[in-house]
Image (cartoon, rainbow, N blue to C red; front, side, top):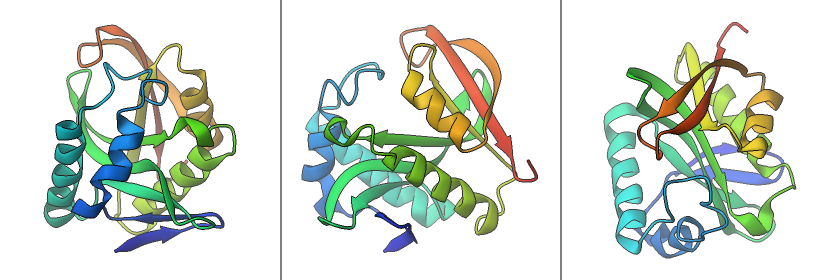
Length: 171
């Protein structure tokens, strides 16, 4: 089911049919260079199944990012409830496959998901976390109006220094 449509993207719920295309993205060592490690096929399957469960339970999750021109799955974007530095947060995440970097797709998808969260889901605050050296992710957060809230060592990602950005619905 399509959730959001932007000028260049369709953001839709995952189905099990998306696993092969998503695994191409999540198993890529360049695309996943800031994650603890690239995903295995089983991890990509789990990602899809866990998000389908989130849709049913919460009404949101991470979604497939589809390039309209080609109908190609090029990334992942959406909201999860995550423990970040010991606190439950509504975490806006975005992954765009490396061949599509530097085209503004992450900003377009993240902005659309932020607006959807505030307008359609009634979420008051969104966060995004990224390793300190992930300049592109930091720029995406800043371009959609997020501000750095704090720094912490992320036990879920090799205990590396991590930046937490956030935005409130009334910002």
